[in-house]
Length: 346
Image 1 (cartoon, helix red, strand yellow):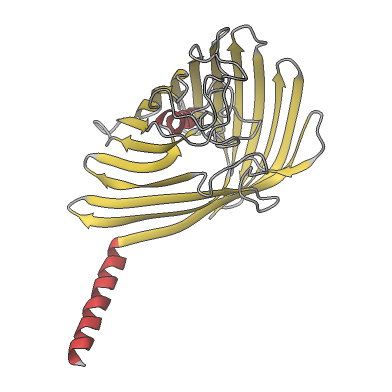
Image 2 (cartoon, rainbow, N blue to C red):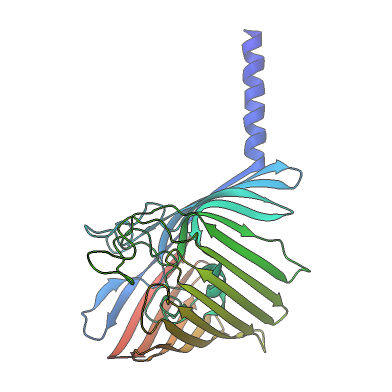
């Protein structure tokens, strides 16, 4: 009996120690409102991705920590898993699914998440990569590029699955290098005709990548100035590079500019290049923030796209804000977009 009590006491002490050294959090975003685009009816939709996440850090001692992060993405108006239909599929942990180690060497993780190129780009865009048509990240700022063309139809465009992710420590307190390397695993893509034919597509269904995809980026953030350079090649040998800068002439104002070029020569026999640039600004005014941007995308042999956008966020608290966006987009046709909604982080 005494031995059992001693064992129970040791187990309890061990559990308490593990709990003291671990930190697990549940977090998420709920974003919903009304929006309307030219030629469509008024709809309940979203401005940002809605997510439910779980993340944790365990202190392993000696400056080493284990960490994990899982994110489910969902549609706020229906509660369904994001964009999953009878013809498209998205994984349960669409946002990310990663585990790894962190220490003096930086952060090393394995699984699924934003590529280095995509994760770096969003900090140099006025809407921070939100997928709303009023923003730029989903199209103009990445020149219409997709990081993951060899996943199932409907899957996210800006993530790598089956990948290794590395973030270096800060160099001299201002610079960082980020690298993502994907394996040559098949992920359930539909057939991609490319330079082939409908009967003999260049990439048949469920094809492995032609070469292992990879992504690299570097940033320098020093005082009011930020600089970025990034390069990525995906599983169908499409590559893209980008450079960007941000500057804060006064504390409330952040100015941003990016330029990017995409090359699809491996899969497109004609007009493979796409060039794009985006300029934007964020300006803090009292409890709110003004967002503004203008961008242009010029694919070879295709009508140029121009977009102007303006937004406003009003903070009700540190976790909740109201927002409104308006944008106009000119290409083969002219589309105006309007939205009004609420964003809550927990």
